[in-house]
Image (cartoon, rainbow, N blue to C red):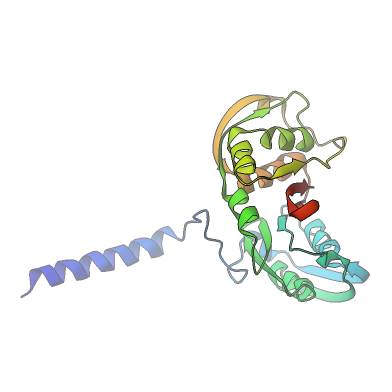
Amino acid sequence: MNFKLVFSSISLTLFVISLITTGSTFVYGFRPSISNPGSSDEKKISLNLENVTVFGAVREILDQNNSLMAGVEMAPGNPDSIRFDVKLSNLTVSEALRVVLSNAPTYDCDLQGDRVLIVPKERDPGLSELLDLRISKISYPKENSSVAVLRELMKTPEINLFLNSRDLAYSDWLGIPSKGELFPASRTGSLAIDKSVEDILFEILLESGRKMWQISFSGPKSKHVVIKF
């Protein structure tokens, strides 16, 4: 008997069993398709909207699911200028998103648990790299709001190095924070986090009660990074 072959077969079987029993693990950088929804997809969605934009309809879906949040990497141009009517009833979150985003065919949508990530089918390498960039430490100021924390995020050494190496700049269009969105006082000060920019943006939404962030390039020759809530 070929013992090496038997041992290899057993090892492969144990590896497959381990994958089945432990379940899949979300690895940053691999985003599962919308056909693999999380718990948020259990909530049924109904819409009856007229003359609505794509991301206006997405916000309506978010409003019908308290735990759901969305991040959008904006495609070049202005896809949100398209207006349409949408009427749907008793659909899952992933089904409703498919219907809405069929009006913006340049986008893909991934649903991972309570997070929706909407990105162009042809992603901009700069924005994609920025969202994947890992931040080691961030300062939470006393004015602990989504606006203030995002401004601190954009001051981190990792983002400054990224922007400078690509001759980019950050454009602050955030204005003043809304009332009622201050983070817990325990989150003030400098914290070690070792998380991606994308993960931090979703955490800002979770802490502040906001529902969506959008990131894009704008300005002359698209040299300015803009992040909005």
